[in-house]
Length: 597
Image (cartoon, rainbow, N blue to C red; front, side):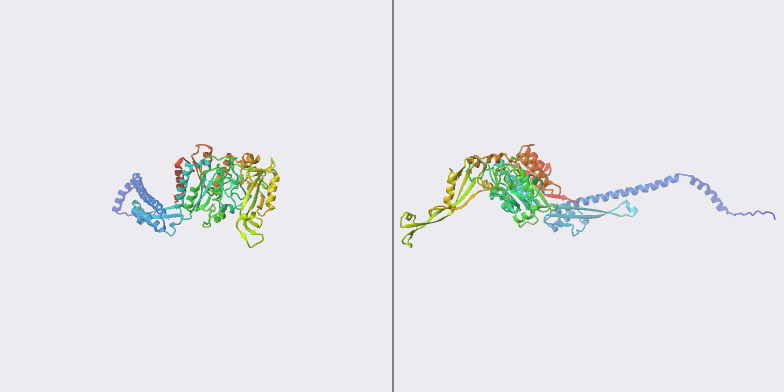
């Protein structure tokens, strides 16, 4: 069978054939024409740019509203933090928003948003607003939410302040007058800016030394060697720490003074005293009573040398928590004073005013602890310390007439002492109500005793006879011995000065006191620097302000005061009545108002 070819034929209508012939070349040309792609891309990019512009405009409007809200919230929270209570703070904030036409945007206050306490004020303000969009609507976003918040915190922390004031002799006259006025204004400002009990101030005057009141002294552990004063002595190492630990044993300062060699016995009122026992020199601890503080400041008097290192040492110790038991004894009404260093709600401050550089102080030599002035436990060499001084104290009573009695008629008595000379009468005597104190100073060089009351010399034999007659009276009207004592040197220096002893006996007491164991101004500067550094140390962070009152610019005193301050900006120079400006500035700086969010 031969191959056969199958032929398929398609029958088209004349109308479709004509349309194809018309469209085919045109479609082919359009497919090959690039101008259409450019137009499509242009339209697409135009829409993208329009959308981006719309987002930018809407975002900018959103940020403007947020910024406006934040500004009003900041102002309102700050104003509210100054209000006296929670309700008043809420009213102040709401008033701010109302006056700015933004009341609808202030969110409701939460339970912790407003907290006005005795020593802090915290006001948190939260706001929100829905900003209508323009072009972002194309994307289906009709509003953008704007929110702003602010927290203002007014911190009037509990304050513990040591006001350390130079009352050395150079402060006499107008300087002391101006200081008193400025210090009293400072006290008023601080106490009145705090709620009752939230600010305590200690007034610490210093000159040759610092004198604690009896209550503080008795709360400490002191190796007590006399009853003449309450000053204590610190070793050089003690200045590296802020604390005066009540459980640590401290040496007691020997009470003596340098004054004119012709001065009277038992008259130790000179400005050269190593320890002042006057009430006006004793510091006032932990008071929040304006009247009491003012009275203390007004009582201050100027005398003596300058010992700024002791002022800072005591000022810091009164802020150290080691003194909490002492504070409880001094003022039982105060709780948790001094506060722990890590107590965030308490700010500790020292304000120190000085009018000159540190100057030399004098002490008797101490062979067992030279320059540390520790109490001598053994006295292997003569050092004007310890028992058996050259001063002897004798107490006796004079006999006074009581009555006369007739020898043969006992019932007959007379109150007339004139009867005593008659043979038929016998007189009876009784001890006087007053005890006579007599002091005798032994001169070892010439082996004799100086009768201080009668200002005459006695030989050892005469002195022995005098004591024997008192102890063994013959006549009924003879004086009677009460006590006899050879005083310790520490007690003796509470009655006489080294000058007096040397002038009467020719001893070397004056030279020993003045030259053998003094603490120079430069030594005091080193100790003051250590005390300031300890107070400012991390973890303690006591803020120190210092004032140089009418001192030489760039001199030693200014350098030491600047370095003691927490920063040089917290050091102030003052002249005359302008000292008030320095104290006012410090009082202002102690206040703390800040925006915390």
